[in-house]
Length: 189
Image (cartoon, rainbow, N blue to C red; front, side, top):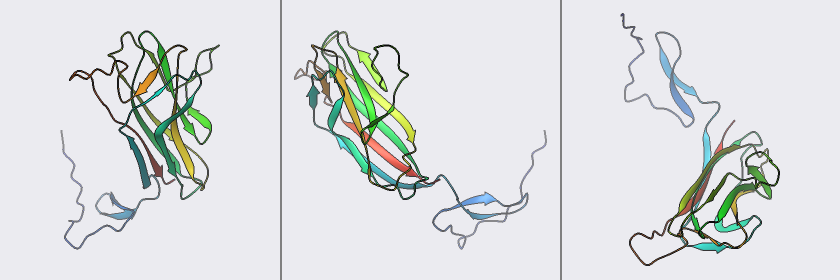
């Protein structure tokens, strides 16, 4: 099997990229720095929640401290959203999590009868269990106005759900205090 080698010019210490440039092949025998026209990360905003919270609500409500605001530079920008929520809830009950842009639910399963639409839902069998609800979503907000992304939650009637701890919350090494976060990145078009 033959090995083909490109004869690109050498990079020496005087070759430096300007902001927004990437080293690329300009032909079969040459390469140079070229402007990157799309896919640039323009800004990153994150919020980390280290305290605990609880809910008994059977309809979606905001998780205190799990929101982040970003002002896109262009209407053509995409927003990449990362969510990482640690939660536990009462034995034999279920809870669900929703990703919301301002007041609109944006990442959820299909509608199906009376089932809850969410990006994560689960049921626990004991109070010492805790779960991680994660989401990665690419949004197209089409605005240059401040936009808030947040996580909401609900729990089955009769139960209590908790953030950053399990339902038992024992003062023991097996009981964990966790951290949760929401991060948004503006990606240039």
